[in-house]
Image 1: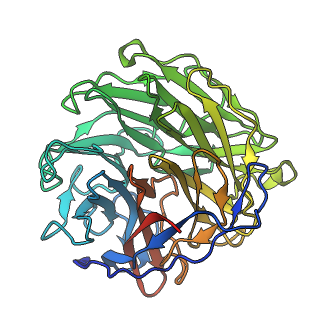
Image 2 (image 1 turned 90 degrees about the vertical axis):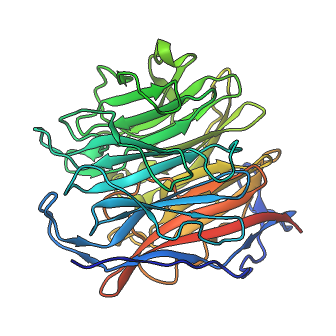
Length: 455
């Protein structure tokens, strides 16, 4: 059986950031440079595999590539990268220290069920762990188990208590027959990886996911992942299928859950909240209205209690193509964490960077936004777009490509684009994980690190 190679390398500081312009909340481009720029390091190749994708035959499919990269970073600058190896039918994990050196001699293999694909993981670690080496790593992913329904999918969770060197036995959080982890746009088009993971305060771990038929489920652990409560259905009775959930927590401890909906070209984003996880979530309401279809939200809350929301939206005159990410444009909105009354969504001034599936992150004083670029309605995604803004002005710098993601076609995500691509710590250290699929050549996983610095 073909094997995948894993690269143990670390970057020399190759500064690739150039001049960037900022634009205001309207948003329009300003005439002067921002006070902060991003210093990028050279991309690190974390893993490499073949680039072959045979026809779909469920778990017997001949898939030979690496994909589905995701990332976390703590305030010590330690980075955890996870990805999928389709040959192994498993998730792999590698750690990197602040200097960019691989910590583990070999990547840790996290297996789900035997002979079953594991897809689109999310990883979470504490910002300031008590033990800088053997900290807890939380992992959530979609396991393509077929248990009697029309679509395969279960949501599995596993925990490491030694910094990712080994993992405890996984737990099945969903136990569903209806394709857990699938986020439906229409009956015939969906993204896998419709799930999210939140490491909340006081040892709470929160997991959310959707199923093919549309329910949105949430469960939580109050003992740092040792055990989980029975899942709650947040959108019980909803007429439209939920997809792409995003979790965040406010300074007061309130848990926020935002998601998009399918089967409707005019669907708006929905929101529900929980003051106490044991008491469940509020009835869903509309987070904010848009003139077209809003999709794939990403949510963060800053230390002052402002909620920041990023999402892709289709303009009203493109509704016939609302399923195509090429027609999406990035939008942002803010709300007070207590009132949750969002401002009108503002379109980012980035028409040359069409696409969606954003990841929004923050440091102590800045927002960072990355998303998947699409160059043509019928083409695969190509490269990542990036911008950033101070929290006090929200004036975003001119959009730039993430280094190393646009020099070869194509971006990965062959099973779906719902993923967490970026993590940022309090000091503004950036970690971006990207998968690439180069037909006829290879697939690979890249780690791209950067740092916000004053000019």
